[in-house]
Structure formats: structure tokens, C-alpha cells
Image (cartoon, rainbow, N blue to C red; front, side):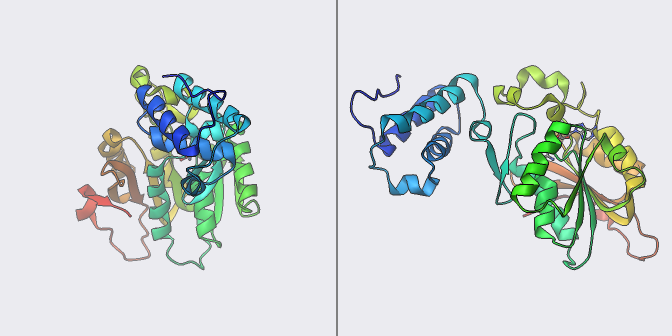
Amino acid sequence: MSQPDSRDRSWTILEILQWTTGHLKERGIETARLDAEVLLAHSLGMSRLDLYLNYEKPLLPEERATFREYVKQRAQERIPVSLLIGEREFWSQSFKVTRDVLTPRPETELIVSSALDFMSDENRAYEVVDIGTGSGAIALSVASERPNAQVVATDVSVLALKVARANADQMQLNGRVRFEEGSLFGAVPGEQFDLVLSNPPYIAGSQRSSLARELTHEPELALFGGEDGYAVLRPLVEGVGSALKEGGLFLVELDPRQAETVAGWCRDAGLSGVRVLNDLAGNARVVSARKADPTSGAVDNDEKEHTHEHSS
Ligand SMILES: C[S@@+](CC[C@H](N)C(=O)[O-])C[C@H]1O[C@@H](n2cnc3c(N)ncnc32)[C@H](O)[C@@H]1O
């Protein structure tokens, strides 16, 4: 299928969308219509709603030039839409993304919603750390929802931290979030937190050849946890007990196949109330665990340890 030529006649927004959707589908892209709409809206400086309201509007040749280039890169090189347009929505905010960071995924919002549930006292200055912050998705979402929280965002990648800082600037959160470079808890030595949040790299290197081509455009450091997928998860769980205050909460994202293993490590590390939380697609996605608080008298509900809970 060849792209409509600008010399033929003028093409309307609807016609271009229909053509592009068919083209991307032929290339095996499942989100063809959505991708076409997002790329066209971005090329025209419009919202997706504006596209619907202007279906019959003819496009000028110069308006189509940028769009044509985006479609080519999406179809041929499998560059994700987020990287083509340089942004992705997460927790209802627009995050700048580059090739130096993982594009935030919708399932990661489960960490944010679970953290906010725990931070129920909006006036309390909860101390929170986001290990491996990438674009800043988790840290900045929590900071924007809990103005009194003291949030630290860490990453081993200086380039990722640069993107996270830019996002903090854009969201006017820069004074509220501290950025620290370093590996795992080495970025915040000796500090203790009410919440330790993390979406670490957890894909097994051994799965590399079976992954979607889109992932080759994201940083290896953000995706792969060594050959078995546990290279970062394992030391994260081993170190989290010392980094949590008594009564503090640990939330970590993982592959559904890793959930029971990581839950077991949390129990071995002396954490209590260990739970596996499902994402909206019904996949085990987050392990949640508490550091016991001997002074509170509260008993974590161990009966729930093996249940999978949905979080909205
Ligand atoms: C899966 S990405 C998550 C990014 C972001 N938190 C999100 O959820 O969209 C993992 C991040 O962890 C960082 N990372 C990898 N190894 C690390 C380590 N040992 N210590 C700290 N951060 C690490 C990567 O640079 C990357 O930014």
C-alpha cells in the first residue's frame, strides 16, 4: 500500500487516519488506530479530540511531511510512539521521555495508587524513595499527590536523572524532590524511609530474542535484570529492611512469574504482611511488604499473604 501522494488531491484528516491505520495494521502494529491518531495530532499541534472535530479538514502538503516521516519510523523501525513524540502520559501528567529512560507503563500506576493508599494522612511528611526513577514517573506522581511528602528519586543512570529533573521542572516539583545518583541504596546511604518504591529492571536477558522490536529503542539498563531477571531485584529485597523505618512499606514491580519468588524473599528478609497485587489486566504485578513496628501493636494480616488483590 503506498501512502497517498500530495500531488493527487488533498486528503482529509479522516482519510489520512484510515489509510495510516491500515498501513500500520499491515505491518503488524496492534495499536494502529491509536498510534495514527496520536502521531497525527502531534504533527498538527492538535489534541486527539480536535482530530475528531476536524475529520473533513484537508491537510496541506507541508502538514503531511512530518506525519509521513513519523509513520515511516513507526512502521519500519518500530520506534515507539512515545519516543517519536517525546512524551507519554502517566498518572494523568505528561512526562518527557527520551532514549535514556524507560517509557512509563500503565501497570506501574499500581505502585503509585498503592503508595497513596498507604499515605492516607495528607498532612504527614512521609519520607519516600523511588529506586531507579527513570523519567521520574513514580516519584513525581507521588510528590504531586502528597504535597507534604519528602521524596527522593535515585538512578544509577546520570542521563535518566537529567530527564527526571526536566520533568520535575516542567511539573514545578523541583524543590520538592531530591535526586541522587547511585546503585540501589548506595544512592541514599544510611537513610531510612516510610516508603521504598521501585520498578527495577526485571526482564531476563535469556528472553531477549523473543521480545517486541519496540524494546530495542529503550535503554538496556532499564529493561534487563541480568540473565535470570533477578540481578537488581535480589539485592533490592536484601537491602530494603535496613532502608525502611519501622512500620514502613515496600512496593516493588516485577514480572508476574517472579512474584512468588520475590514474596518468599521478602518473608526471608523478615518483612511481614507480604502480598502480591494484581494489575488491571489481572497479572501479579507488585509485591507489597511491611517492616514490622513493634511499638504499634498492630498485627499484619498474614492470612492475606497468599491472596492476590486488585487495586484500582
Ligand atoms: C524499569 S526502569 C523504571 C523507570 C521508572 N521508575 C518507571 O517506572 O517508569 C528501571 C530504572 O532503574 C535504573 N536502574 C538500573 N539498575 C539500577 C541500580 N542498580 N540502581 C538504581 N537504579 C537502577 C535504570 O536506569 C532505569 O531507569
